[in-house]
Image 1 (spheres, one colour):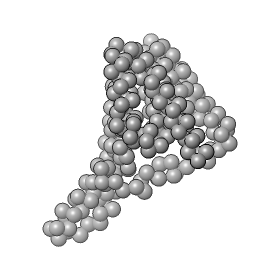
Image 2: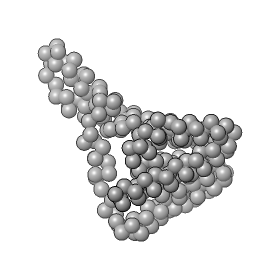
Image 3: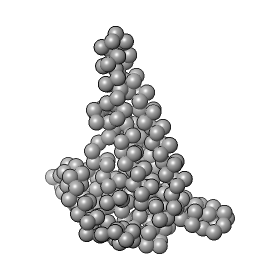
Image 4: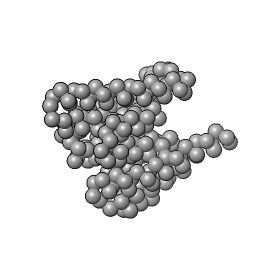
Length: 243
């Protein structure tokens, strides 16, 4: 009971972060902060899939929104540090730090300044990850293959790779072609992973400070769909950025 209460308390922290920083992010972009706030806080993805279900993604996306908002307020290194902190909760938040770093590096006048900024951003990100690992007492034990392999153990029909694999296998079986379902699922998984990587590289190539939110949000949506398990609440990653 105490553990569940602590989890709920962390969710409240995440909701407060969203309530404070989503309107701040909207104001930085010249859009309606009230509409952005209610699109997030009243979204079924947040209310039903994050809060009611008790997922730690709500704290991660709260910190992610805070990091992007801080960056757009003219403090990109502070935003990178916050996104790195969010990544210690869930790795996809690291995309926020990468996109902020690339966007602001491109804003530098000279190549030397660009490299210097990227090195500084990398040092801050690594410093936050190491500091959290030391303070929590986990060390580097949390950086294991299970961080990436655990979602692959789940087979959801709504995941594009899984759905395409099972459907294709069923159709081929109907016409007398014996192909393993998991074989096709794995093949489509490789394809969706490659597409996700391609979209990520394209978005980074196009990223500038004015379109940072659009590029980051696009990648987070694609990453949620193109991963090994497309749980519905994963789409909240992009929602809180683009709302």
